[in-house]
Image (tube, rainbow, N blue to C red; front, side):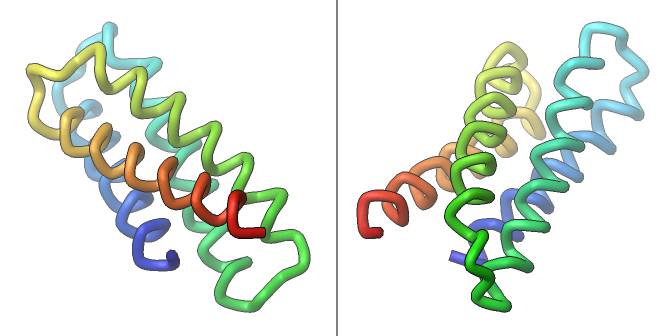
Length: 103
């Protein structure tokens, strides 16, 4: 679980950085979602690591943010970093759903 969260955060950060270098105004929403998703995934990973009683709340938020980020990256599937980010976000969404169903 923790690996999935941190991997998603890393892919989102990479996507943000790559979008930033492209200096394309059409990528602004992608970049915003990348940053937000990365932050939420990292924080959720920290909560999981310390067995916080608030983990379930953040996993729901993480699922929603990861889905939003994946959907935005899907608009740019012809760009490799967006495609990789979308894949990582979808894995995170699936992991969050599995956790929710198990608890």
